[in-house]
Length: 411
Image (cartoon, rainbow, N blue to C red; front, side, top):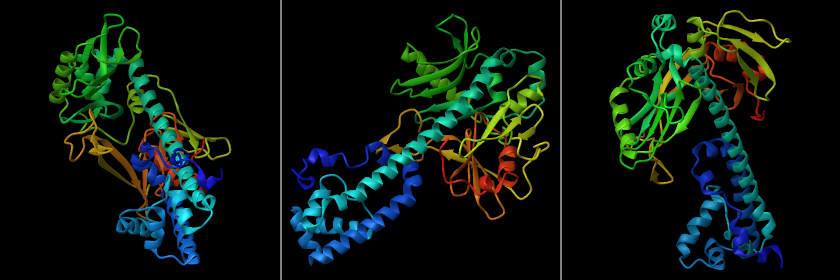
């Protein structure tokens, strides 16, 4: 049996899975390569049809379309490069054009490879953000006692700027969502608004993330056990109690973090309050160590082959800070996403997008775990969130290979 006669199940595997089809970020990253492949595919089909001396109607009739107009429209999409040829349509089209099926299948396989490569990059970026947010959460857990009780540290923090937390917040279906600020979280803990009984030790569990739906009963909580100072993710055993907490959360969080600073980090604020915080390691796009940022002193310490840099305070000259609200998509695969959207037609406020706009108008986007250049290529990775000043240094002071953005996202 030759390749042309493979069973339909085999050809059905030459197509992206539903997750790749739905993920807009995957398509954005794979877009340039996909467009090039489809352009080459369109030329291949048009040339094969011309060599065979067939009209579009004749081709789709040979493919077995019962409704010829629908088939002609689909063939026109392929010849314009608007769509790829997937699944069992690959051998059917090749047979109709009297062309080698391997040549046609190669385009679909190349596009599938581009999508899978983009999925890997998206996962890598998500993991970097998760690791950076986890480091912030661990920092909160480490100093949970000082933050949740009155004392000298709390008094010093009260006099310092409030900071937006990237790892803490709330997301309740149909009712909204967003991130907490440090001052809000401290007040909520002290007043018992976000404190529940820990089921592992019977002590206090200080909540940092509340998500779910009062309507469906689905919910997820994350908090810090004051006894062990460990971060725990859990669900309430009683759905009614969970719904009560979710509803109550929407009442106490209106405006939480709205006036918080976006250009500084939790580590900087805690260090100014006299607490010992770890340094942040920065790597370039290839994963090579680039610099170390010390939140306590505000100094960036480049690797040994780079010149020393002084205090990082302030955004670099020529860069404008732009903070815009970020909302989740209203639907995922045509279905409302429970626990993260409100209202369904617009999506919930998930947080903010922090951008540095350069002299040419290009927007460098600062994520918790990495920095993107205007072409959306990763130019630096962080193991913890860094302030805007550090990102501005990366844009304006780092070597040309970093400032221009390396094409690879590998680490």
